[in-house]
Length: 585
Ligand code: MV4
Image (tube, rainbow, N blue to C red; front, side, top):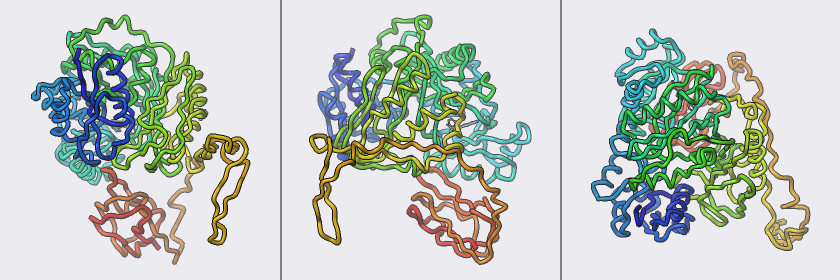
């Protein structure tokens, strides 16, 4: 076993890994950026080293600075966590060249799976089912047209070096194909510096099922069960569970065999995840890609399989042998994870960074909280918005849902808006309760605009019992007033879920003569394409502008039929949320 390991990450996953090292009796090193001087993960390590400024490129993504921190501290191995450098084959290689152990798969396996076309070939070679599609990158629209003629529509265009929904486009018909291809290529080069794309038949109403793999250096490859990650929004997972409520024993057995075969095919070692789509018939699954890291949602597998994945990652990297076989793996019960993000679910999950005021974690039977923050913590704007993962285990799914609802009610976070009210509503949603959702559920079937954040609890102490003091300004003069019946007496989260009202046929909304309507930017971003010009006649739903935000392209369409009377922006321009884009009359 190593005597000292460096954790090249931050937030909840750094805390998770530092805890694992402490339990293993291995000395730990944290690294932190200037934005994370007060961060919780720093306090969980035996020593901590500042590696650079807040910008990820200057710190958590900076290979040289991380290797230097390892040298300075005398660490023998580096655990990358997820995100940042976790799936960077160059980093894995640089570790080895510096005489350090990378706690993860061999660089060759990361590289092979990072190329999604090569990954599809590996899956085919392993005899696993892959989504019908190309086994080479496509170069031009003619190839897409030929694929459509052969396999029909819709078609999925995907970035060969992509992930996370970037460079992913669905083509519904031949007419959309050229624009979609160009858009996927632009998005892909922007996000990944390469514009190769490939094609798949688009599977409608599919579920997102992933398989957890754990492999040692001695030829043991285990399947530890599946996770259902269907509940997402814009490719951001929100709720994960294990087992999947819709995976039969037969599908599970085939999924496990296929996943192990794929891992063996690429010489995989350490923890990894095979991502699949399960068709709406709930019988056919298809390999999509492999994630060569420990995933955010690994705790649901840990709770059901009763295995500590983080500790096994370190032991495997140190050369230890897995002491069990596939026959010893018998996942039990049901686990659910909710991602508690600093985001406002009523405002399209807009990031809500800031300083946490009150923070009280739930506890009690079957509850686990993996958190990177606490009372007074700052959620910096520079990184993702994950505050904590709330994970529960129970004997069955209904008990797990009830336990999660109870734990969500106990969880107090004030000072920043969070996804807690969203999750609380989901736990009672009849469709979720029945396990009947697809990947479009959050976007198409929920109206979240009425979701309310819980009232800020009154501060602890005598004031919390009956009375608290507020400062009010009346006519510019400040008064101290004692009020009662506020704070802790206020109702808890009122979660309102209403079905989305049927959309009026946009075509029926014809242009009311002389009435102007200005289309505004739904988010801050860069105008990358102007699809119309002043004077053009447009139809409801027609593309007006392509707005790139957070490396994703957003199509801004016309709310109704009419004429473009004014363009307020031009290509290349940066716009703020709410900025006027196009006026239609
Ligand atoms: C698909 C698909 C249907 N058919 N591929 C979205 C991001 C990328 N990782 C893969 N994605 C999808 N690929 C084919 N051939 C549907 C999705 C998809 C999706 C997949 C998993 C979880 C959520 C999703 C939400 C929308 C679309």
